[in-house]
Every structure is written in structure tokens, then in C-alpha cells.
Image (cartoon, rainbow, N blue to C red; front, side, top):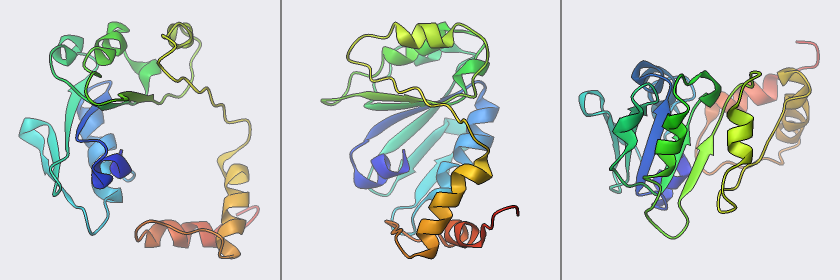
Length: 178
């Protein structure tokens, strides 16, 4: 989402979590939230009372709660990020999020979740052909999955479009069994 906003490709973005508290404390203000990963060149301003992020280039991200699915009816977006959809109490929130994705040539929704035995997978599998759904499942521990990436960092094969000192330090410091 950060890349979309900073590049200007995502002028209107919806950020949706289970509750507004989740959106604010995880997606916006969290350790891997929008404010934490913002580049020095394209800072965003956070207006909590308006549930709004505005980047210097004019891109906007509005925050919504899945627990209030009717709020998603009406606005228009090019991109949406739906976080932890398996936790959402109201499945119609996902349906309502698809409605405002009507701006631009190729509106996109990115949905993330930690899987649970529930009906979300069936609902995503029934999505129209215009919706790209990629299922991914972590089959190994995070540390094991990160080792090849850490090795690429150590060999100098990784380049970032921005400065991410903490991330680089963490990846370079990863050691097997640590």
C-alpha cells in the first residue's frame, strides 16, 4: 500500500480491519504499519479523528472497521487492503468492500489473514474472474523461511527503494538457530 501511495498509483485507498482500533494500532501506527514504513521522501499525515492518511503527493487512505460494514457503501477506491479477514464477524463486510473498488482501470483488493477453519476460503474461491486470488500458506517456521532472504542480504544481492536500516540490520543479523 505504501508503494501504491508513494508512487501515485493508488490515489484512493481503503484500509479495513476487524475494528477501528485494529486499523489504527496495527495497519497505521503499528511496527509494520503505514507510518513506520513510510519513506523519508513521501511522509504521510495521519488524522485519527477523520480516520484518514494523506501523503504529500495527495494520495489518501481512509480507515474502516469490518464491524460496521455499511460504512463501506458509498465511497470509491482504486485499492483496498483488508487485514485479518478470518477474524471479521460480518462476512458482508468483504462484499461491501468490493462495491467501492470502482475507481481507476484496475481496482485491486489485497486481503490478508491467518487461516482458521471457516467459510472465508469458500467465499474467496467464488470471487469473480476479475478478482485475482492467490492462496499462500506458510509451511515452515518464520526463521526457516527468512534464512534464504538473510543469505541474499549477506551476499549484497538485495536492494531497497528507500532506506530501511532496521530491516537490513535484522536480516543481516539472522543466524541459523538464533
